Length: 235
Image (cartoon, rainbow, N blue to C red; front, side, top):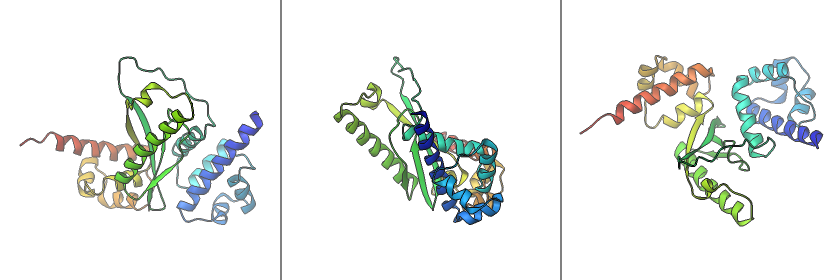
């Protein structure tokens, strides 16, 4: 049983690595050259027949312009969605406080890509052209998912049935974040609020450069600051 679980987990890690590679318009030979290995090695990893140790995974992430933390978050979201990680026990808040459902968002092939967090397993990956469309799809798909679980006699927490939740959107990369708010906030405004050059923000948004976690936080803090200033305005 444990061996089969490991095999299935490796399969989905390989799928995620393949998705990230294809998003960068790279083939297996390109990654193999970057890592100094044979193409067959990459192929075995992507189909899940070869395991990676932590050091190898770090090198692989660097070749894909990812940090280990960023990729680990994607692995966790996907494995929880596929029910390949144990469900975390969560206390139902009896005070009536609204539950938060995390939505992990990234950018792939000029689209937004999202998956739900660990407290709602069993839902796959969503894609949409705009952030607004993605939000609509997530809300509708979750409602349908809950109805299907109830209809099939599955145990569903009462807070999910009663829709006592709200979505919390977590951006995993700057490209998704900047493209989500591009229709509403200019790069000039974000540059002033964050102290990051406008030209660098443009490179992040177009995938020409990759941000580190602290840079992503600076951009998010700047967007929050701009939003707070706008909501403080009165007439």
